[in-house]
Image 1 (cartoon, rainbow, N blue to C red):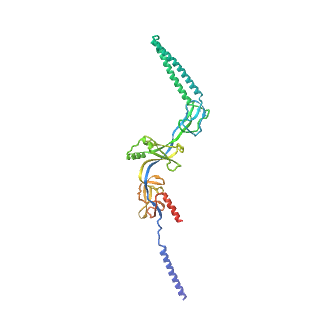
Image 2: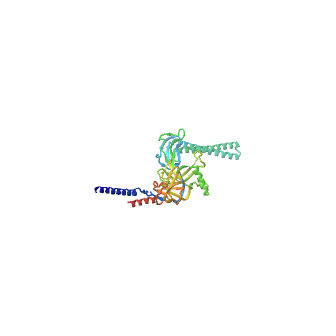
Length: 398
């Protein structure tokens, strides 16, 4: 009897174990695929865009000259502070003027003497003419008086020139600023003898308002500009330069905050570099920009009324170039090669390869693998709208 109980218990446990194993096989071995990863997609923004050439260049002063002593003498005064802004005709240096004042006085005295001689010569000539009319003198005497008067007139001209020359040299003893600008540190001290063997450099002056920016345009870009103008029925003329705007930005600045206009275009390409030098003019009243700075330059070259733009951080790159991930049929991700253009804030112009109706993956790009299915959520391409959606999602989660 006890043996039958043990045998029945073993059969019961065996069938129970088989049932449990069968249940495990039915529930544990069935594969459930993970849900598609969530991504956010948006259509490209279509809006008018001004097309620019984005280049690099350097600033340069409007005027920059060396201040030199043009006469010999000792420096008696330095009438400015190094690095200060001065106005045109402000006195910068004083050179001893006693010698040049004496030379001027001497020249004036010589002029007065020659003028007195001229008066006597004129009187003698008039007297000889009267005597000639009375037939009291000879023609030879008249001719001699006329020659003496001519010599006196010539001597006066020479004396006047000497006075002017002495006045100029005396004026050179005061070294003046040729234009408004910033003067560098002085290169000579008070008591230094200058102008001994030629002009002596005393300092330099630089005019920084307005300010130039020089940059180079490639041969291809020059041809593109000419083609664009030709399509518009225009030809390039130097007189049109002031009407063409230009913008620059420093390395520490966002965008192109400084506005100006083109001022000069070289009449020929540099064969060694294949570029054309261009110059733009900018106001610099606050003297925030200095000559010699590296700048980013932007010049408008056209207009696109229906440009397509996508977020710059949604654009990827590989060995073949730039691309975006778009939503295909049945929410399957596709990779589209594109040609990118200029940046417009957080967006970038797509010149080709994208359609206005395409849904571009703008978030969750790492999970969006070409050929795989995703769970899309449609958003706006505007980054601000996407950020607002993130904040709303976080609030809902909390």
